[in-house]
Image (cartoon, rainbow, N blue to C red; front, side, top):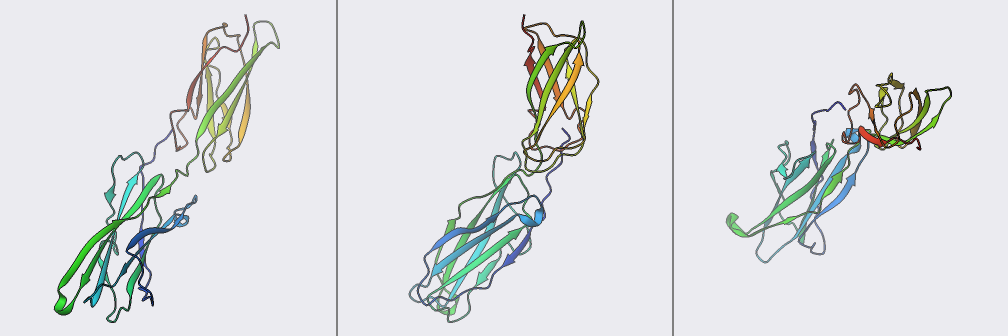
Length: 248
């Protein structure tokens, strides 16, 4: 249940400008959106292109990358060296100008897009035209583990006044979870926690608790990661209530 403040370390890498024999379209797009468990795996590349127009001598392009990280509801501009600066075509830019801006070490979960601004300059630096385009979104999923309480079952015994409870715990996240405790409450009293040594993404484990029989129709509570040791993608499913699985 332990929460971590989102960290972000971004590096802007600009690909060289390209002169085209044919005029490129006026367009802004996502040309790469790579995800993965490590910060170095998470990359977005945004490409802008612009055609030459009559009388233009230099073409300028600027990338402002916007991010919505974690639970944020709105996009905000990233403040990173190399972003938000004007890139300029060489003299004799031919038919147009194409530029790719790469951003690495993206934080997840997060959504990223770029606003690409264009300017056409003519003789003596006269601004002939300006406009902008927005790219689609590159989404980075939450890479942390997500522990979930699954099915709870129970059978009478093995002795008088006893019941055996079986509980499935699953890691529905994208990375492995370390060791954590699981607590079963409401079956007469809180039972001693059980220690899970770790759980790979997509894997599950079945735990067995011996406790007094619950009353049919009553409610039991399951708490995974009872000591809050695991930073998770979602905390809302760590505590779950289950109806007593014993029949009348």
